[in-house]
Amino acid sequence: MTQDTRGERIAKWLARSGVASRRDAERMIEEGRVRLNGHPVTHPATFVGEGDIVLVDSQPVSAPERTRLWRYHKPDGLVTTHRDPEGRPTVFGSLPEGMPRVISVGRLDLNSEGLLLLTNDGALARKLELPSNGWLRRYRVRVFGVVDEQRLAGLAQGCVFDGVRYGPITAALDSRKGDNAWLTVSLREGKNREIRKVMTGLNLHVSRLIRTSYGPFQLGTLLRRELEEVPPRILRDQLPKGEAPQTSPRSR
Image (cartoon, rainbow, N blue to C red; front, side, top):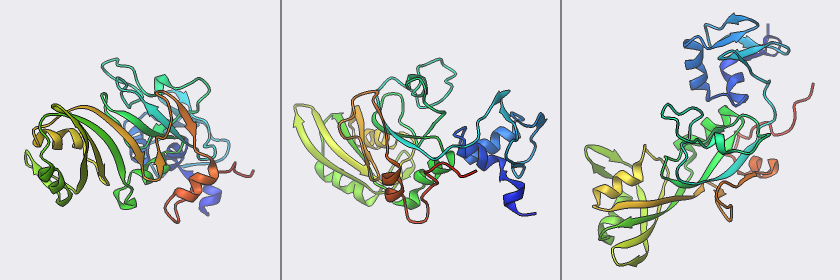
Protein backbone atom coordinates (compact mmCIF):
# COMPACT_ATOMS: atom_id res chain seq x y z
CA MET A 1 0.00 0.00 0.00
CA THR A 2 1.46 3.36 -1.00
CA GLN A 3 1.44 6.47 1.17
CA ASP A 4 -0.98 8.07 -1.31
CA THR A 5 -3.59 5.38 -0.66
CA ARG A 6 -2.93 5.36 3.07
CA GLY A 7 -3.17 9.13 3.36
CA GLU A 8 -0.86 11.31 5.45
CA ARG A 9 0.69 10.79 8.86
CA ILE A 10 -1.56 12.43 11.41
CA ALA A 11 1.14 14.53 13.09
CA LYS A 12 2.10 16.06 9.74
CA TRP A 13 -1.59 16.45 8.82
CA LEU A 14 -2.26 18.33 12.08
CA ALA A 15 0.77 20.54 11.48
CA ARG A 16 -0.40 21.43 7.96
CA SER A 17 -3.85 22.15 9.39
CA GLY A 18 -2.30 24.83 11.60
CA VAL A 19 -3.09 23.06 14.88
CA ALA A 20 0.53 22.95 16.07
CA SER A 21 4.02 22.11 14.95
CA ARG A 22 4.59 18.45 14.14
CA ARG A 23 6.50 18.00 17.38
CA ASP A 24 3.69 19.56 19.41
CA ALA A 25 1.13 17.48 17.51
CA GLU A 26 3.03 14.35 18.52
CA ARG A 27 2.89 15.54 22.12
CA MET A 28 -0.87 16.04 21.83
CA ILE A 29 -1.18 12.47 20.59
CA GLU A 30 0.85 11.20 23.56
CA GLU A 31 -1.48 13.12 25.89
CA GLY A 32 -4.53 11.41 24.38
CA ARG A 33 -6.00 14.63 22.99
CA VAL A 34 -6.44 13.42 19.40
CA ARG A 35 -9.16 11.14 18.00
CA LEU A 36 -9.59 9.76 14.48
CA ASN A 37 -13.06 8.65 13.40
CA GLY A 38 -14.11 8.38 17.04
CA HIS A 39 -11.09 6.37 18.21
CA PRO A 40 -8.13 7.63 20.29
CA VAL A 41 -4.93 8.07 18.29
CA THR A 42 -2.05 6.39 20.09
CA HIS A 43 0.78 6.69 17.55
CA PRO A 44 1.97 9.56 15.31
CA ALA A 45 2.39 7.11 12.42
CA THR A 46 -1.40 6.82 12.17
CA PHE A 47 -2.58 7.88 8.71
CA VAL A 48 -5.41 10.27 7.84
CA GLY A 49 -7.27 9.78 4.58
CA GLU A 50 -9.77 11.88 2.67
CA GLY A 51 -13.08 11.98 4.52
CA ASP A 52 -11.63 11.00 7.90
CA ILE A 53 -12.82 12.96 10.92
CA VAL A 54 -10.12 14.27 13.27
CA LEU A 55 -10.83 15.78 16.67
CA VAL A 56 -8.39 17.62 18.94
CA ASP A 57 -9.65 18.29 22.45
CA SER A 58 -13.08 17.16 21.19
CA GLN A 59 -13.10 19.88 18.51
CA PRO A 60 -13.16 18.96 14.79
CA VAL A 61 -10.13 19.94 12.72
CA SER A 62 -10.58 20.99 9.11
CA ALA A 63 -8.44 19.40 6.43
CA PRO A 64 -5.30 21.35 5.48
CA GLU A 65 -5.77 24.24 3.07
CA ARG A 66 -3.17 25.85 0.85
CA THR A 67 -0.19 27.16 2.78
CA ARG A 68 -0.49 30.81 3.74
CA LEU A 69 1.77 33.25 5.58
CA TRP A 70 0.99 36.61 7.18
CA ARG A 71 3.05 39.49 8.55
CA TYR A 72 1.65 40.82 11.81
CA HIS A 73 2.74 43.87 13.82
CA LYS A 74 2.63 42.61 17.38
CA PRO A 75 2.21 45.29 20.05
CA ASP A 76 3.65 44.84 23.51
CA GLY A 77 1.30 43.40 26.12
CA LEU A 78 0.29 40.30 24.13
CA VAL A 79 1.65 36.80 24.70
CA THR A 80 2.43 34.56 21.74
CA THR A 81 0.39 31.55 22.78
CA HIS A 82 -3.08 30.18 22.09
CA ARG A 83 -3.94 29.66 25.74
CA ASP A 84 -2.31 31.55 28.59
CA PRO A 85 -2.67 30.03 32.08
CA GLU A 86 -2.45 33.51 33.59
CA GLY A 87 -5.32 34.80 31.47
CA ARG A 88 -3.26 37.47 29.72
CA PRO A 89 -4.38 38.70 26.26
CA THR A 90 -2.87 36.71 23.40
CA VAL A 91 -1.75 37.44 19.86
CA PHE A 92 -4.26 34.93 18.52
CA GLY A 93 -7.14 36.45 20.43
CA SER A 94 -6.35 39.80 18.81
CA LEU A 95 -6.61 38.61 15.21
CA PRO A 96 -9.56 39.67 13.06
CA GLU A 97 -12.61 37.45 12.68
CA GLY A 98 -12.51 35.07 9.75
CA MET A 99 -8.82 34.22 10.14
CA PRO A 100 -8.05 30.51 9.85
CA ARG A 101 -6.31 28.83 12.75
CA VAL A 102 -2.66 29.92 12.64
CA ILE A 103 0.51 29.46 14.63
CA SER A 104 3.50 31.73 14.93
CA VAL A 105 6.94 31.35 13.43
CA GLY A 106 8.98 31.62 16.61
CA ARG A 107 7.78 33.98 19.33
CA LEU A 108 8.01 37.48 20.67
CA ASP A 109 7.75 37.78 24.44
CA LEU A 110 5.12 39.80 26.30
CA ASN A 111 7.03 43.10 26.25
CA SER A 112 8.47 42.79 22.74
CA GLU A 113 6.97 44.33 19.61
CA GLY A 114 7.27 44.20 15.87
CA LEU A 115 7.20 41.62 13.12
CA LEU A 116 5.64 38.27 13.90
CA LEU A 117 5.09 35.78 11.08
CA LEU A 118 1.91 33.70 11.26
CA THR A 119 1.04 30.66 9.16
CA ASN A 120 -1.70 28.07 8.85
CA ASP A 121 0.95 25.39 8.22
CA GLY A 122 2.83 24.08 11.25
CA ALA A 123 5.35 22.25 9.07
CA LEU A 124 6.25 25.53 7.37
CA ALA A 125 6.56 27.27 10.74
CA ARG A 126 9.09 24.69 11.86
CA LYS A 127 11.12 25.08 8.66
CA LEU A 128 11.25 28.85 8.98
CA GLU A 129 12.45 28.59 12.60
CA LEU A 130 15.41 26.36 11.80
CA PRO A 131 18.81 28.04 12.35
CA SER A 132 20.09 26.15 9.28
CA ASN A 133 18.16 28.63 7.12
CA GLY A 134 20.68 31.24 8.20
CA TRP A 135 17.98 33.90 8.25
CA LEU A 136 18.91 37.15 9.94
CA ARG A 137 16.51 38.54 12.55
CA ARG A 138 16.92 42.27 13.02
CA TYR A 139 15.74 44.39 15.96
CA ARG A 140 15.70 48.00 17.09
CA VAL A 141 16.49 48.07 20.79
CA ARG A 142 16.22 50.99 23.22
CA VAL A 143 18.48 50.62 26.22
CA PHE A 144 19.13 52.58 29.39
CA GLY A 145 22.71 52.81 30.60
CA VAL A 146 26.19 53.63 29.35
CA VAL A 147 26.87 51.93 26.00
CA ASP A 148 30.41 50.60 25.62
CA GLU A 149 30.78 50.39 21.84
CA GLN A 150 33.86 48.18 22.08
CA ARG A 151 32.00 45.57 24.15
CA LEU A 152 29.04 45.93 21.80
CA ALA A 153 31.25 45.14 18.80
CA GLY A 154 32.72 42.18 20.67
CA LEU A 155 29.34 40.43 20.65
CA ALA A 156 30.04 39.49 17.02
CA GLN A 157 32.50 36.88 18.34
CA GLY A 158 29.90 35.27 20.59
CA CYS A 159 29.69 35.76 24.35
CA VAL A 160 28.99 34.04 27.66
CA PHE A 161 26.81 35.53 30.39
CA ASP A 162 25.68 33.72 33.55
CA GLY A 163 27.15 30.50 32.21
CA VAL A 164 25.15 30.60 28.96
CA ARG A 165 26.98 30.78 25.65
CA TYR A 166 25.40 32.93 22.96
CA GLY A 167 26.24 32.88 19.28
CA PRO A 168 27.43 35.85 17.23
CA ILE A 169 25.32 39.00 17.56
CA THR A 170 25.83 42.10 15.45
CA ALA A 171 25.03 45.24 17.43
CA ALA A 172 25.60 48.89 16.57
CA LEU A 173 24.82 52.19 18.27
CA ASP A 174 22.33 54.25 16.25
CA SER A 175 21.74 57.23 18.52
CA ARG A 176 22.22 58.34 22.10
CA LYS A 177 20.48 60.91 24.27
CA GLY A 178 21.58 61.10 27.87
CA ASP A 179 21.43 57.60 29.38
CA ASN A 180 19.09 56.31 26.67
CA ALA A 181 20.31 54.86 23.40
CA TRP A 182 18.91 53.09 20.35
CA LEU A 183 20.75 50.07 18.96
CA THR A 184 20.33 47.91 15.88
CA VAL A 185 20.81 44.28 16.84
CA SER A 186 20.91 41.30 14.46
CA LEU A 187 21.23 37.58 15.11
CA ARG A 188 20.62 34.32 13.27
CA GLU A 189 19.81 31.97 16.14
CA GLY A 190 18.07 33.35 19.20
CA LYS A 191 17.68 31.73 22.59
CA ASN A 192 14.79 32.68 24.86
CA ARG A 193 15.00 36.40 25.74
CA GLU A 194 18.54 36.40 24.37
CA ILE A 195 18.82 40.10 23.54
CA ARG A 196 17.52 41.17 26.95
CA LYS A 197 19.89 38.81 28.77
CA VAL A 198 22.92 39.82 26.72
CA MET A 199 22.19 43.51 27.23
CA THR A 200 21.87 42.90 30.96
CA GLY A 201 25.33 41.32 30.76
CA LEU A 202 26.54 44.63 29.31
CA ASN A 203 24.89 46.54 32.20
CA LEU A 204 22.18 47.83 29.91
CA HIS A 205 18.45 47.68 30.60
CA VAL A 206 16.19 47.06 27.58
CA SER A 207 13.20 49.40 27.71
CA ARG A 208 11.91 48.64 24.22
CA LEU A 209 12.54 45.85 21.71
CA ILE A 210 11.09 45.91 18.18
CA ARG A 211 11.69 43.19 15.60
CA THR A 212 11.96 44.84 12.20
CA SER A 213 12.69 41.82 10.00
CA TYR A 214 12.76 38.04 9.97
CA GLY A 215 14.80 36.73 7.07
CA PRO A 216 13.50 38.33 3.86
CA PHE A 217 10.25 39.49 5.48
CA GLN A 218 10.09 43.07 6.74
CA LEU A 219 7.89 44.87 9.27
CA GLY A 220 7.80 47.79 6.85
CA THR A 221 4.95 50.24 7.41
CA LEU A 222 2.58 47.84 9.16
CA LEU A 223 0.74 49.58 11.97
CA ARG A 224 0.37 47.97 15.39
CA ARG A 225 -2.05 45.01 15.26
CA GLU A 226 -2.13 45.27 11.47
CA LEU A 227 -2.04 42.00 9.53
CA GLU A 228 -1.06 41.50 5.90
CA GLU A 229 -0.87 38.25 3.94
CA VAL A 230 2.31 37.50 2.00
CA PRO A 231 1.35 36.88 -1.66
CA PRO A 232 1.83 33.20 -2.63
CA ARG A 233 4.36 34.02 -5.35
CA ILE A 234 6.54 35.99 -2.93
CA LEU A 235 6.27 33.23 -0.35
CA ARG A 236 7.48 30.65 -2.88
CA ASP A 237 10.29 32.90 -4.08
CA GLN A 238 11.60 33.73 -0.60
CA LEU A 239 11.70 30.26 0.92
CA PRO A 240 14.92 28.24 0.96
CA LYS A 241 15.36 26.20 -2.21
CA GLY A 242 13.52 22.91 -2.09
CA GLU A 243 11.26 23.97 0.77
CA ALA A 244 8.56 25.89 -1.07
CA PRO A 245 5.20 24.74 0.28
CA GLN A 246 2.02 24.01 -1.61
CA THR A 247 0.51 27.47 -2.02
CA SER A 248 -2.32 26.69 -4.40
CA PRO A 249 -5.47 24.73 -3.60
CA ARG A 250 -5.02 21.00 -3.86
CA SER A 251 -6.61 19.27 -6.79
CA ARG A 252 -9.31 16.75 -5.97
